[in-house]
Structure formats: C-alpha cells, structure tokens
Image 1 (cartoon, one colour):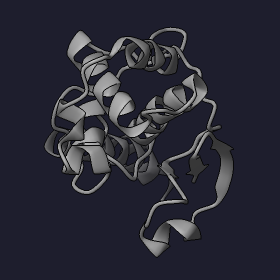
Image 2 (cartoon, rainbow, N blue to C red):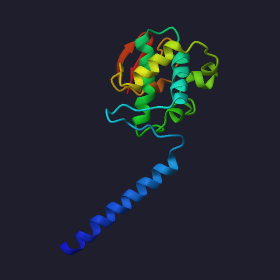
Image 3 (tube, rainbow, N blue to C red):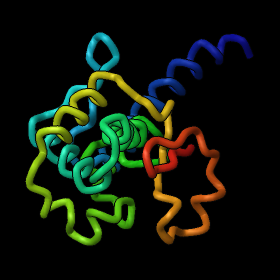
Image 4 (tube, rainbow, N blue to C red):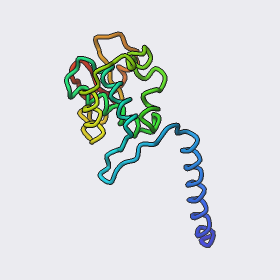
Length: 161
C-alpha cells in the first residue's frame, strides 16, 4: 500500500492545482488584486478612481478616517473568499452599496480627499480592523446586518465582520 502513496499524492496535488486554476479563471471577472512584496495590493488608476467615487459617495460628510475605512472594507472584501476578488467586482456586486444602486457614485465631483483615502487604504491603513460591512445605524437597513459582529464605529458608520 505504501508504494501507491508516492503516486497518489503527487497526482492528487496536481489535480487540485488544475481544479483551483480552472475555478479561479471561471469565477473572476476583472483583474485580481495582487499583493506587492510588502503585502500591499496594487491597483490601476481606474480602480483607484472607482474606489474614490465609492468613498466620496458612501462616506460623504464623514471624517477622513471614516473615508479610509470605506476603502478598507472594499479591500477586505477583495481578500475575502466570500466576495468577488477584484475592486470593481466588489463595488458593482448587486445591492452591495447604496450609492452604486442609486447612481450617486457617478454624481460626485470632488474626488481629491476620497482619492487620498483610497490610496491610504491601498497602502494598508485599515481603521476597521478587517471589517467586511458598514452601515449608518440612523438609516433604515436590512435587519440581517445587525447579526454581524460590530468591530468599531467611525463617524456615523458602524463597521462589522
């Protein structure tokens, strides 16, 4: 029996690698975020602009830390197996962000601060400590979000896993 293991193990690993590559190739739309040597994801200027638009629309009137936090949630979702693995995939996921659904993301004009917040999030600042969700408790939200573990509150947003 021991002689079979030397054949079964390498073949099994090869099959798993092929299945993983096929699964990833079929699921991912857009460009996968790749970590740099320091472990910080890199992004194109279009992805930074899209993140900045989302941050400006979702965190309008929030403190700078809260704007970075919204960007961090996007990146935490990119890294999570529960969400799409690209910035655009996370942002355009149906019903994920109110500002995408109602079009506000395309109406924001001043992106200076939001762009800086996106860059800070991409550079590794995560004031949410790994949150995957955020919401404003003063607004009507789906009761499901209250089942999430709240990590912190920044400005008027609650951040949770």
